[in-house]
Length: 264
Image (tube, rainbow, N blue to C red; front, side, top):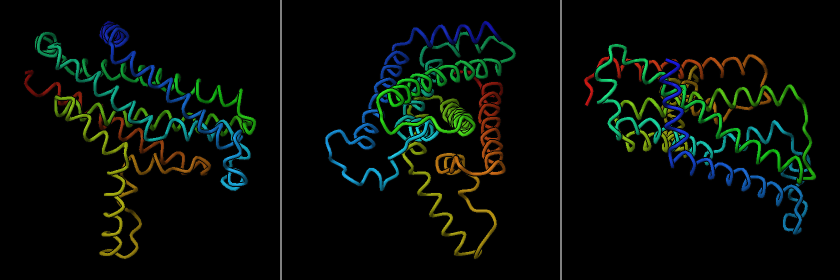
């Protein structure tokens, strides 16, 4: 298992796509910092009193973690990385040459996903360190804020991002193609799926009145991307449970598919 993870990490670190996405993540962090600087400090006096009205007179580290790492743009970077990394096994013939002659095929998607999580962690670190670091150094409105809030926000953001990475990984494994992984992943990241879920909410309310459970309560993207990080411990635990559930289902499903179906 360890050797499989090392092999996947070696391939990841030497892949051109990984290097390109690492650069894109760094540029995204700089872009987020630049936008925050323009709005919060208003060096060119464009915003006037609007910055204060929008709540940018004081920006905390936990707020930046939530805004930078939960944005649709960053999640698209994660989706592209996971899909390209997972699909390379099919594209390069690794599945056919190696997995086809092994008995415990489920070990391969598990090791591949663990390596993908390490890569996602690195991308989050690049974006976070550059974006939040530059903000802490050069944005006058920045204050670190509560350390507890920062740790809670960072932990939930990381868990939610990894869970979404598991979903992207599952789609790529299920469809055996980059297109099959990218299309549903972009539908999730761009908010198209959330709009469909809201329509389903309206339909359920129309039929059932005021049900205790709505479709948006069951979908990971709706729970994670719209979650208020200032919520209490109970809400945070519910979000964590949903993330873990999706993670187990997506990775377990990928392992089961690889173990049961024929290798092409």
